[in-house]
Image (cartoon, rainbow, N blue to C red):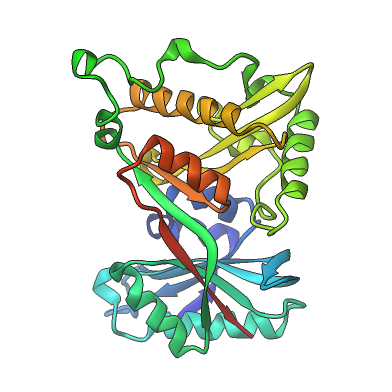
Length: 303
């Protein structure tokens, strides 16, 4: 059985929702559909079997146009309840939501890789049409960083960045006012013509303050890198941008620094996922981690 999850029911489904997404559900920013397992007896308590998270968003890039769409953020069925049609039931609920919404369609992004092919096949069966979008992802581990460490100092520091190599003018986003931070993010959005950054939050509190930095000159932000906290304490880089057309070297130094900070300060087993939506960000990430290949993302659209 599929239900619209009410505020008092959210806790039942939390174990099926990634940690990084829970706040958006609790706050009501995202809608939640839940699949319940069929009880085997009259007195058996309800058990969460699956969950779907989505939200309507304006200004979503579809081809060369900006549209109002429903963004499908998460679809998950617990392993013991798969192959019972629950994912299809939740998709039925999403289709009903689309009918009652001003949105033109539904969008979901699926990374390339064989482990995601079944997900794409499922969405195609529902009529989604997939195209490759200009976005790539790269996952960095502590081992990837060790490859950049000199043989003389493998434990203590990264050769490409140490805690003492903070670029001049660098400040944590927590040192900015909310207004200054918002203005910097909005400027980055305007400069990125593809619309890739359109859905980036403009609130400082949505980011990891110890990994998210700006470089300022004369009180003006010229470069910015933003990380979100991810599931199980992982990190997700969502923005790497310069507001200065000649700022690529500065941006590289900033990325060097946060890579070193991650290596020196985060526990073993913490990974960093880089979403590389611009050619500049892919070039910079490839410069630091030449042995890593970004994975392309495919975008599915359903009308």
